[in-house]
Amino acid sequence: MSLVYEFSPRLLSETSPTAPGDEGTHSGGEELLGLDSHHGEDTAHGEHAHTNSHYVALLFFFIMIVLGALCKTLLVGTKVPYTVALLLVGLGIGVLNCTVDLGDPLGKSIDQWETIDPHLLLFAFLPGLIFESAFSMEWHTFRKCLSQVTLLATVGVLIGQGLVALFVKYVFPYDWSWNFSLLVGA
Image 1 (spheres, helix red, strand yellow):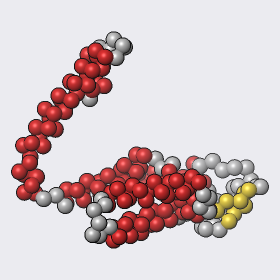
Image 2 (tube, helix red, strand yellow; image 1 turned 60 degrees about the horizontal axis):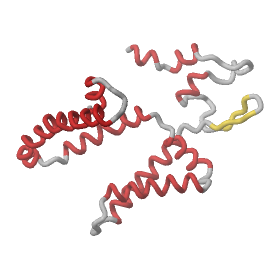
Image 3 (cartoon, helix red, strand yellow; image 1 turned 180 degrees about the vertical axis):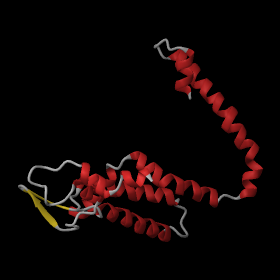
Image 4 (cartoon, helix red, strand yellow; image 1 turned 90 degrees about the horizontal axis):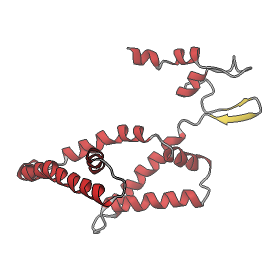
């Protein structure tokens, strides 16, 4: 209940500061949520004009979905891995965005995705990726390899941590404590 109240447009409009002379045009909270009455129109504030462009971020997202489906279709019968093809497409679009002016909607959309909060990206896409991996996993193969996976995930990690800690402790000239060396090894 508190989350709904905390992010309601009325609460944001009551508490958000407005610039002098902007009292009657719109509230800051409605614009923040994309609910302002000038949806999609150019509005003038003082000496500058802006466009409400909350939808622009979706343009690059949908273009990448189409390109991903196209890559998947074109790679049928080839030995090129799908993830490598997606990496190359992403690198190509990144280089293209840096070298060529892609115009207002597409360039703006790519810029918004380049500056997205990493936590938002992680929380939005990681659950789906984990679910897809778990859903497509072959249970019989996993059960057969479970003892080896457990051994590597416990003893293997501890051995790796210890070797890195030894390297850090005796090779680096910083005279770090064992606790800090083990922390770096982790």
